[in-house]
Amino acid sequence: MKIDDIVKTLDGTLVAGGESDRTVGAVVANDLMSDVLLNDSEDILLLTSLASDQAIRTANIVGAMCVVVHNAKPLPSTMVQVANSLGIPLVSSPLSKYESCVRVHDFLSNESKG
Amino acid sequence: MDYKPIILSGGEQRSDDQIMAAHANSLDAGVKRVSGPSLPGTEDSPLVIMELLQRIRVKDVMKSEGIHSVIRTDSMRFAQNLMKRNKISGIPVVEGKRLFGIVSVADIIKALEGEWIQDEVQKHMAVNLVVLEEDMPLAFAIKYFQNYSFGRFPVLNKERDFVGIVSQRDLTKVLMNELTKEVVRLEVGGAERKEERKTDAQLPYYSMHQFVVVRNDLSNAGKAANEIKKLLNEVGVDKKIVRRVAVAAYELEINVCIHSVGGTITFILDSDKATLIAKDRGPGIKDVEWACQDGTSTANDWVRSMGFGAGMGLANSKRVADVFDIKSKVPTGTTVMCEFNLK
Image (cartoon, rainbow over all chains, first blue to last red; front, side, top):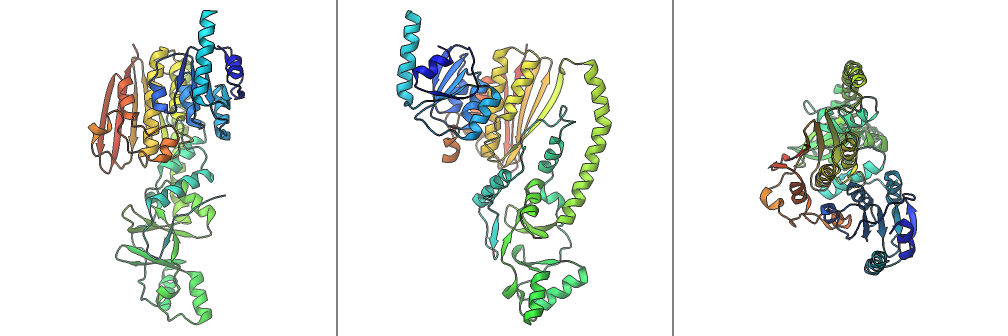
């Protein structure tokens, strides 16, 4: 699953951070950044409801490959700036976080089968 | 610009919230860079000045002794004479340690014109005062002078006692002195360091970096962790270790930002270990053991809305570090040290 797939699967829009060809290594759905920091996985896809700079900075610390913010929440301009400057793809999705989890799970299951 | 000053009405005590709001707003208002490297590595940067403005406190520039003051029942005439004799343009109305108002030259002129120069000062003094707190960084004081036409600000301590007065003149004098010292230091040290860099282009296997963390400035929190991560990657430290150091740096930075009145993150990189030291200036932790447990938190809703404050900060830092140490004293502050073996 790459950025393009994430955007399509989650009906999202790539708002910042630019293209990248990294592949999802693990999925973390969380709004609590301390929990995210505890995670040891590589190439994390971070599904969150936290529309703040700190979601991006946390993603940067753990080397996440993409951050998705849900419910079409308005993104602060500073969040977009930080995502651009750190080069972390930021996707805005109209879906709920739960719906996103389900769709990402289905996509990854099909991918591993296919 | 939405800029809320700290205003004291006639001796009333101001709340911490007001102070915080004013701090946050004055940061928005123009004190731009508050987090960034400071020791070796920044010699060529204007950050040196920013750091100076953060490091020097209002109490370092204020006049605290020999301040002329009047009490509420003194006459305007008495205040006028005192000001004339001592060539000062404003005089605080103080009883004991409590500040009630200020009488300025403008008030005296009005009193002469309106023929109420014999009245008691409490009838005509200015009571809605914009005050500074002695521990505020100089940057705030400068901002205040820019935003208000006042020539001086009264200074209060944490107990709300009147402790001094800052005038633009005092401020400029101290700032010029400090800048001169800093320039001398950079000129002497800069030449030597440039030599060193030439011979050791590979990044320093002993380097020290310090980052200033400002209270409640969450928009800048995380910058130190990011810089530290970059530094470690540049020297080619194992990615897993880099991540552990970055996680601790981030958590500690957030802690200093949301729980303390401000402080610093110092990062020391040695050939076989990396050390993080988070040091704040208060208020200190009463029960350190309790604070280090998972899930214990004193954070407010605002902090939680930013994705933090679940009480994982110290526990997380401890978990990722090879050596963890915390010392705290109320009210002077907390120092947390995390050490990581690089080999």
